[in-house]
Image (tube, rainbow, N blue to C red):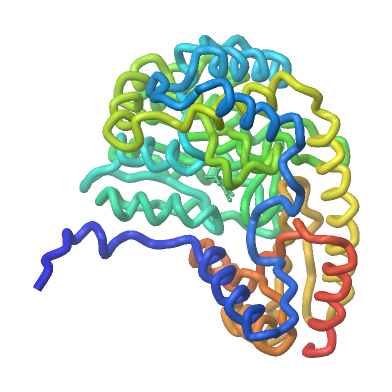
Length: 387
Ligand code: PLP
């Protein structure tokens, strides 16, 4: 009998990967599947970024790099943040990791232990709750409501802080809802946090460049008063269609940099060198392809939101960011899971049940519109037939 640690049984998962596996299995059986389940751009990484990665390999960048990332890449990140958010970031506070996920894993492990409380958005990216449970801390959900445009309410977050609260996780623009939290709520949250100087903040800004209808991103880095306890997560996966390269970063407060660097050394040593060079090209090279991608997403967003609202029993809020629509399907009489399973089995359309993002996701379904307009229209046509 193998005796696994209890903690292993507390780990959750990201169901989008399971849906992807089921969709691929059905595809292999010859079924015509349209995948609106997985959250990754359907575009290729821009060619100049690919070339930079290849060149780095040809130039002999085959060895370990500093655990926190090569200096040129951390400089490029600091300059990019200055350009986009108008903030000064010391490259020494930038820690490059393999994707967006390692930052949340490390941040949660750094603060989470039995007896501690960590707040996280629900419905939200499922890894937050999973890793909080894994750490032994108590997950305290921040309920996100459709009526509020799936933005968090600062008052509600602040009211849940207790002496045990160590870390608050926020995510705007958000997965799975596409919700964007307005600046006034963020202002209010930051002001309220002044009464709680021992509470750290993890701001997941991975969708910071995917905003629509003239919205501008508000980065938590723009609030100097919380810099000493802010972890700001961003990366290349979504912006530059680089999910498979595994490259991300966070800006860490001074007092956490050593801790996270040691976590990197214990975990993965460093991100592979060629990928880091590709990351420099992404930040310092032309941005037109990344912008064109967002324009495409915007077009699809309008089409999918309108088409979802035209389905019987379905209503869909106008998502302001990311590339997800999160319609309310209660009027269909199906639970989220039933709708997910039936749409896949009977219509060949992969979506993800709202409950995969936490209990507050019941009654909703996530549609990723990282797919062609033709496929989106065909998927919605098939779903309409079922309904
Ligand atoms: N944060 C959010 C909110 C996400 O939706 C995702 C990916 O779906 C990530 C982080 C992780 O990104 P990565 O693939 O770079 O680990």
